[in-house]
Image 1 (cartoon, rainbow, N blue to C red):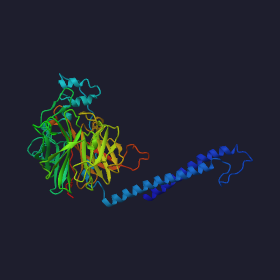
Image 2 (image 1 turned 90 degrees about the horizontal axis):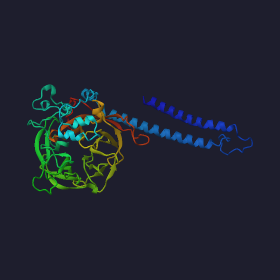
Image 3 (image 1 turned 60 degrees about the vertical axis):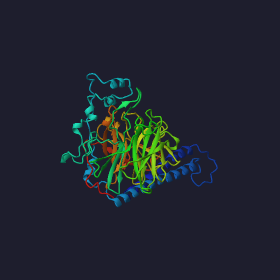
Length: 504
C-alpha cells in the first residue's frame, strides 16, 4: 500500500513539473513568432531565443523542491502514524468503544407558543432580543420544554437503587445522586486520580444554596459554601467527602467570604512536595477582582489551607483551569483582558505560584471555560464562548506545545441535532480526563447551568474520542501538522467499555 502511494506521489510531482513547464512553454512559443532574426544568442544553453527560459527553469526547480518537501513531510507522518499503530495496536479494541462513536440523532425541538403567565424573570428577558428563541426557552424556568433540558428528579441517577440494566450508565442532564441519596454538588470542577489509593476524586463548586441577584443587573449567584469533594472507584458511584475548602461566614475582607465568588476549582498533586494543590477563580460579586486563588492540603480529602489570591502575570483572570503535563510541570490557563484572550503560563515547581512567563492565545476570540488534555504528544483544548449563562458553541483547539501556537479545529460536538450541537448539548466545558486502558478515549465533563436555581444545575458527561484526521479548515498556510479530529458524541445513555478501570 505504501509503495503504491509513493508511486502516485512521484507521478503527481512529475505531472506538476510538466504543467509548470507547459505553462512557460506556451509563452516561449508566442515569443518565437516575433523573435528578430539577428538577435544575439544568450550564453545560457537553453532555448536562447526565449527571454523567459531562465525564469521558467528557476520556477520549475523551486516547484519541484516544494512539492517534494510536502510529499516527504506527508510520507514521514504517515509512516510515523503507521509505526505507532503497529506498536500500540488498534486504539479501538473493544466493541463498546466503537458503539460510543455511533452517531445518535435527536428530533428537532419545536418551540411551543406561550402558555399562561410567565415569571417576572422571563418577562424581563423579553428585552434580550439577541437571544435565540431556543435559548429563551432554556433560560425560562416556566418553559414547556423544561423537561428536555432538566429532567424531573423522578428520573435521577441513583447508583444505590439503579436496576442492573442501568448500572454504570451515564444519563447526561439528569440529577445525579451520591451514595447518601443527595444530589452531587461539584460544579465547574475536575477529576483527580490518586495513584496511591487508586481512587478518583471529584472536586467542584458546592452550590447547595439559594439563588439570588446582588442587584438588578447582577448575575445569578449563590453564597460561597465552599468546594465539595466526592470519591469513587468506578467513576459512577460517588461518596460525599464533605467540604474540603469552606467559605468564610464573618470576615467580609476574606476572599472566601460568602458574598464573593469562588468558581472552577482544579486540583493537582505535586510529587515533589507531596501536596495537593487547588487553584480557583476568585472574584467579588461584581466580577471586578478577577483573580486566581490557591490552596494546599496534605490529603486529597482536605482540609485545604487557603493561601490567598492575586492576578497572575498582573492580568485579570476569570474562567480558568490547571493542566499537569507528563513530566510533572503544571500550567495555569485563564480567560483574560476582559475575556477577549486566553493566557497560558507555567507554575513554579511547588505549583503554588505563577512564573513570570505568559503566552497570549486565541487573541480576540472571546473564549472561556478551557479544558486542556494531551494525547500522543499533542495538546488539545475545548473552550466555550462568552455568553453568560446562555450555552454556546464549543470549539476544539490543538498545539504541539502548551506554550506554542494553537490552531482551532472547529466544533467537536457530534450527534443529537443541529441546535444541540451548536449549544454544546446545552452545557459548558469544565474538564477532560483520559479513560484508563483506552488510548484516545476521554470523558468530557460539562455543566448544564440552571441560572434560576444554580444548585439544580446538571452534569453532562460524554465520551470524547481523538482519532482520524481533522476535517476542519486550519489557520496555518499548509495545514501542517495534521491534527487528529476531536469528537464529543452525544448519547442519552452510555457507559464506559469493559476493562476501562485497569489502573496503570
